Every structure is written in structure tokens, then in C-alpha cells.
Image (cartoon, rainbow, N blue to C red; front, top):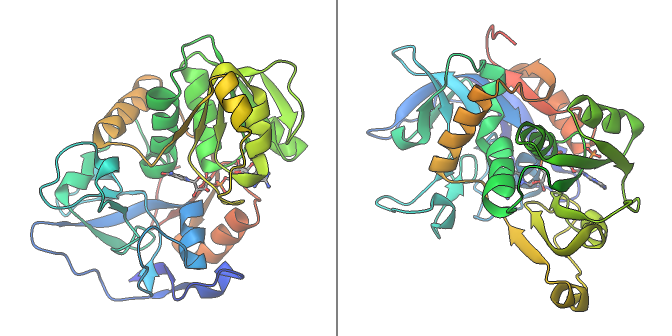
Length: 326
Ligand SMILES: NC(=O)c1ccc[n+]([C@@H]2O[C@H](COP(=O)([O-])OP(=O)(O)OC[C@H]3O[C@@H](n4cnc5c(N)ncnc54)[C@H](OP(=O)(O)O)[C@@H]3O)[C@@H](O)[C@H]2O)c1
């Protein structure tokens, strides 16, 4: 079958190990399901894998991709919950010490087929098309947990999203707008800020620009490069929620500001299966169409990764297998 995989890790030149080619069909462990992929996505997580960076030791080659939509042998359409947990573990999946997401230990979704435990498969409501459903597993689930579980924001409060065009940042914007928050966003270019405006944000700012007033919560997916601005932009008693660090994981924080102004900082790792169900229900009920910037066939995996790696995104980048309605 055709797959997009990491043949090796290279921290300096991550695309050096990126390969689009034929691989054997996945072995399906007893009780697992083989999913025929219709649409899967590129996340910055895959770039980390190509760099050789991950929570677990990476065994190369490994098929990339942690989210996707496909069909089972009986033809039913499913969306993949990507957090894999230890056998018998009960509780918040994101807190299992042995948790991993698809493509960290097991082969991922950027292929014609993927093997998945049944507990990680949910039916996709018919009103959500396959391309839209494919972005929900990691980018949207993480944004959902950041916004609804961790930030403590109420409708009417103001949130700043650090970024306008990425997977998690567009999800935060669309979820925040749909939930009645006043959403502000930074964007690195006028084109990216325009995208955020088209998704319903109230105000946009250049990266690092001083805001007219501090906000109730800041959402940071980039790490070092945006962190100082995130801390400066939150009001007394406010919250910063962080999920990523592709610009660096050092987050230098003025502890005096932190304690005097009683700031809260939350880290987020994906989301629980219950949050995933609720996200699907919210997207379906509110008829949200996730922002997808590019849909390419799986064979064009290299172009898809190049655009994510170079920051040339205008929403999620999705790869499809066969004829998939967009
Ligand atoms: N903890 C988790 O479970 C989890 C889940 C999903 C993702 N993540 C992490 O979240 C991060 C984003 O992932 P993604 O897949 O959404 O990536 P992505 O689609 O490539 O988006 C990257 C975002 O970061 C912003 N950005 C990048 N470099 C920047 C810079 N130098 N200055 C300002 N902003 C910058 C971009 O802003 P512009 O729009 O202005 O270009 C864009 O919105 C990654 O670090 C990823 O590993 C973590």
C-alpha cells in the first residue's frame, strides 16, 4: 500500500527522512480493526517525529499521521481517537503514564490502511464530511481541551490565540467564536490575519504587537517565540494554556508577575475520549466546517509536509486516498 513515512530522524533537516512509497499492509492484532483511510492530516507532531523527537523512543521506519477518517470492512465510516492507552487502564486517557498517540509506537494514519483498537474508533456523524472529520483527532481535540476544559473562559470573555493559520490555532478560533468568546488572534502575515478574520475573530494583531488591553486567557501553541508576549498579554488572574513548543520548549516566565498577578498556566496533552465525543457533538450541532487550507492526494505527501514545515499554511493540510468529497 502507499504510505507517507519517516525513514529516519534528522533534527536539522526533518524532511530528509520523509518518504512516500509502498509498504506492506498493516498487521492487525487480534481484536483490532483494519481501517481503510479516506482522509488523514499532517500535524506538527509529524515534523517532530521526522526530527527524531518524541515522548517515546521512535523505531524507524514509522508511518506518520495521528488523525484520520476511514471505513471498516462493513463499510461504516469511523473517525480515529488517537490516544492509545495501556491494556486495562481506566480513567483520563491523557494521564496514563504509558499513553502514546498513533504514529509514535504504532504506524499512523497517512497510509491506505491503518490498524486501530476498537476502543479508538467512533462513528462519524453523516453531517461531517471525511475531510472535516479527519482534522478532529488531534488538532481540534487539543484545542477543545485547551478552551473548554482548561481555560475556564465564559462566553463574552476575551481570548488571544497566538497564530492565525495553523491546525490548533484555527481550531481554537473556530471553537471560541462558536462558543461566544471574543476572539483575538496574532498572525505573522497580513494574509494569515485575514484568514483569522474570515473565521470570525474580532481583532487581529501582528506577532508580538502590544494589545490595547490584556485578555482573560491566552492560547499558545508555539512555545519560546511567543511566550513572553503571551505572559504580557494576560490580565491579572488570567490564564495561559499551552500545548506546543515547535519554536522551543523554554518558557522563561517572570515569577514575580506570575505570583503577584496570580496567573494560571495549564499544559495540555490531546484530550480524553469523552472530550472527543463532546467535540464531535459540538461540531455537528453547530455545523462547524473546520478550516482546511489544502487537500492533496496521499501521493503528494512531500508537498503537504513542506508547507507545514515552512509555515505556509492557511488551515489544516489534509491528504486523501481515493475519491473523497470535500
Ligand atoms: N499537546 C498536544 O497534545 C498537542 C496537540 C496538537 C499540537 N500540538 C503542538 O502544537 C503546535 C502547533 O501544532 P499544529 O499542528 O497546529 O502546527 P501548525 O499547523 O504548523 O501551526 C503552527 C502555528 O504556530 C504559529 N507559529 C509558528 N511559528 C511561529 C513564529 N515563529 N511566530 C509566531 N507564531 C508562530 C503559526 O502562526 P501563524 O498562523 O501566524 O503562521 C501557526 O498558527 C506544535 O508545537 C504541536 O506539536 C500539541
